[in-house]
Length: 163
Image 1 (tube, rainbow, N blue to C red):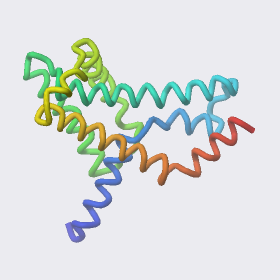
Image 2 (cartoon, helix red, strand yellow):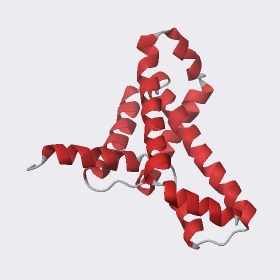
Image 3 (tube, helix red, strand yellow):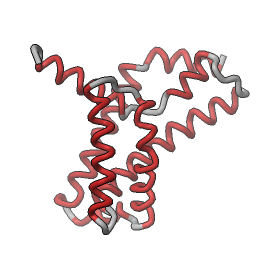
Image 4 (cartoon, rainbow, N blue to C red):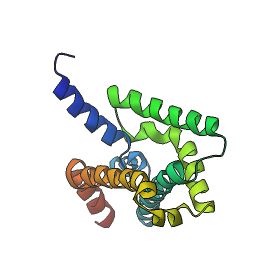
């Protein structure tokens, strides 16, 4: 409360870390917690990162464009997501803490896929603005994580896999 600008700045960084790309298992590969064959570590790393990105993008479409018909369920899911991410934005944000939310996000992603929600993006700015803004925010978060925060760790990880 004494330094509100600093609190906001740190909260934004924690929020970004919370929704950042999956890196717990990748970190485990890097430091030697797991000892799979090298080809599997590379394959698993690529699949995990792409699967998370796909689920998140499709979940954004699902939340805004193909929510459940029962709005009470929709609001319950959103409140759970907002509560968990909000707490971690204030206290400590790390990508491992969003893992309990993945089942809810997968439900939204599945809804988006089965209802072909991406086709609704052509209905105009009013329909497309929120899901596109959410996806752009995620891309900005992931870009910052990869290009600024985790650059050296990623370089070390790739070097260890290739060398």
